[in-house]
Length: 473
Ligand SMILES: [Zn+2]
Image 1: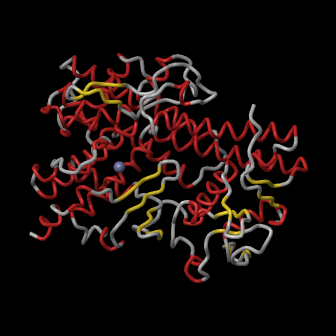
Image 2: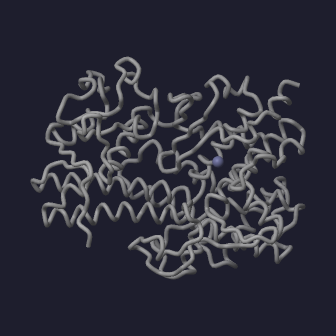
Image 3: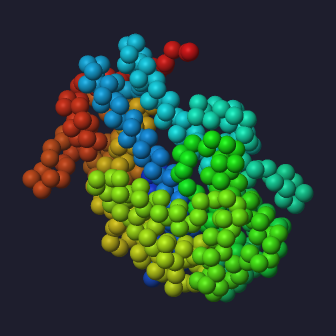
């Protein structure tokens, strides 16, 4: 009964993990790494592990996930590239971009780059999660779309008006998959589907689906969530409100649910029916709603990788995932519906970066080289600090912060422990730990300072201007 008593503990009410799609960064909280080992994991730990992996699968197997990751990656790449160009015009390496505003030409370039990065992240947030869900593009204040289009649908659930966001669809699916697994492991539907303490974010989309389609069709819910995420990146910016809705998981979820509720021929049935029904039904539904077909979405994503001369490890994994999807798309909808599916996906597509208790943990063979993960972390930290704000130390001086500090990996780098490194450093002083490239090409010392040194040639060329602002226009 140990397992049973564990299930009744407040874990059902807690969030034991998090996942960031733009960094493919998975966190598992409150437990030791051993507690997630498949041989000894409790139901609670397995449920958390699978829930967060589900978010990883959403990134790998859907158009929306690829677009979210790629647009963030392209945007930070663009920021860093333009920053290097600004330095080469003789203006030096300044943080943040607003620190270039005393130069008329450089200030203008920096303003455009800074605003582009902010706009890209606002559009991504509009498709995923906004602090005020029910607002228009005009209120979002992005220069890219300035219309009065309502960003997310407002629907009625149990007589109340509810605004559904992309995150409600992604969390709804991950929660459903997690609970499918709990039901399989405990053989108890009552425990698995108990709503006590479950945040509304996990259940809103499901409740909408059940009100429209009925409880007997609940197995189809994760399929609809998955299809809502099969978005195309064409056009990159929607020209019409209809285009926007086709590119937004929240609108698509509502449109697909309403369509299948109105036509009983459009039923995916249970998981055993999916291998024979999923592909043709998904194509039919997409055609009726005027969406780009599922095969074309996969083609579009795969062809994006052919435009890159050399793929990162992460990109190779994303490409392999889309190729996998083209053959068996139903498996990613609810992997826990058949434990052999779950086993295969967890084996083939293990999360590349898992942080438990502040440290990176490896589960088996890592699909992404560890130094690429660290490089990516620092690269994103650099791009973030170009937008600002720049932190200041106790003496009031500006400091830069490495990726471990920015993204709170408290034990990600050995020097956080051995040198008590604060993750902050002043480029005008010495790096926290002296850096060198070893014979085997590995980096010794502070890897963030090493990266900045190789970009700038001399860390002392970096100027930090905390509090710099672009003039109001
Ligand atoms: Zn989640």
